[in-house]
Image (tube, rainbow, N blue to C red; front, top):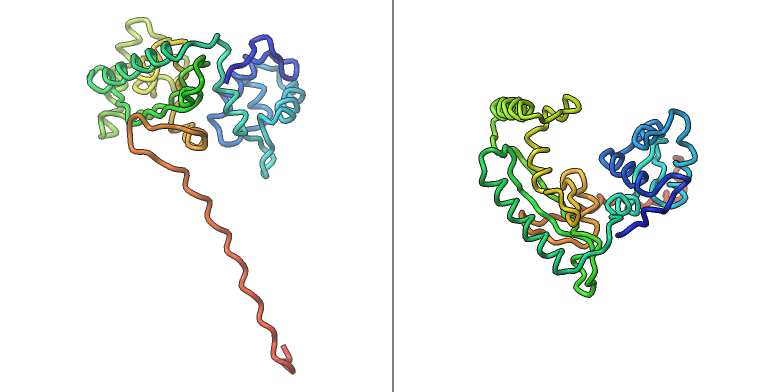
Length: 241
């Protein structure tokens, strides 16, 4: 999907809306205060944007009074504002991405390993020659299975990168250094590659046409059937109950 960077939604630039939805889609449910924080709005000023997003079908209210991102909202959050590229350019970008996957899995400097790569989006449509981007979801896991040892390795690597000038914005980035270093390397600053976290976006990815390039294919488990109430038996004639 491609969006017009000059477009606005509820008076908010489309690129800001995309960034906001990308932040919120990581949460199952969120409140208006979270929307305001994600969109960098002053507290108490997000009602208009909330209504606009609901009108566009990008969000919906949940039963608990919170809000969730719809399928259309997730698609919008993954959209690109860049100019379309040829299929040949997209295929070259995908090949380079898979080479980086090999490097991550083989290089001991990377503490993460790629367990899944899923292709989805317009590249799966052979009739489309000009593509917006290459949509990929990647699953990462720590190479070290021992939790304490993996955490110590992460601390050492974070300190090493900090000594090289890497800045960590918060403790979460520090603790997840093992993950983000691999994820950013895989993205490779490519304008063509649109990379998502498979763990966070699993439901979205599996709900649209997709292809597993690495890892065992999965399917969304069907919702459990609601049991039908048992048929009521007629009381015998003359029953006092």
